[in-house]
Image (cartoon, rainbow, N blue to C red; front, side, top):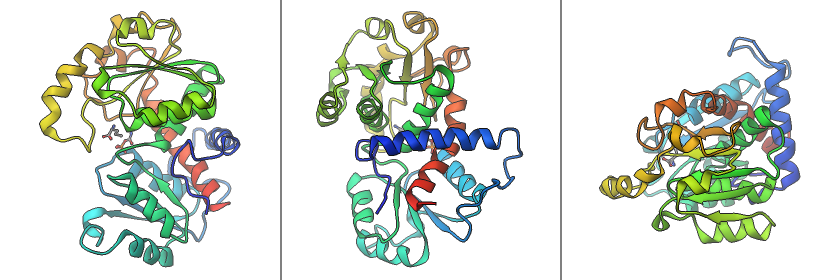
Length: 308
Ligand code: CP
Ligand code: NVA
């Protein structure tokens, strides 16, 4: 079953094909009103379930719009509306949903829920974020980098702050797309060593540099994310803020990256915390292109999974 569960478990040739396809689809509908159907309607007669056990703006709206532009229909379901977590097993839910829909996109907490869904579904499953990874976001980010600066292969990407789920997908992408990743953040929030080893096994460099100024030197891309993710307990908020404050991306820090370095953030951002407004709204920031490209990248992912 062609699921899209993670970047490191997807064939690199398929990943490349999806990025190129996304860019072509974006170009093909340049300037059209958002609700205009695509010239091709590959998802005609297809029903897609979008399940959210956590809040979402971008993932929810971009998947819904993307399916509609390609001629399909969606049902957007929140975890609390389903029997998920009310006693029915994930496996039974997967089997039941497979009788109604052609594809399931799920945003959830534990990665095991995603994997159990994929194992028991008879239709493709897409990872719309778990506590451990966020592959759709990084597909959009790779697309965005390449739109602005050409091939990402061999580039220096610097991740600042928490070694969280989005950072994990960047590590996965480093191995698959061939770029080096420098992590700058406190040791207690380092990314999963298993993912670091995986990237290194693929021949790319992963560096840990605690001093953010040294870390961003020569960077082609600087990335930040929230200091407190949706799965993090609010009781850790103060400790996290204290640990992460030195890693704020501001103009002074960006000045140490390459002059043409880009800044990315998956959003939602907390202005003046992990990043200043001056950087978010500044000339190096491509945050809204990233958000738009979620739409195009996910359309390519949907087509890949459905084989249409
Ligand atoms: N970046 C991202 O996944 O945003 P949402 O949480 O709004 O979907
Ligand atoms: N790391 C963030 C990403 C949100 C899109 C979270 O998991 O809350």
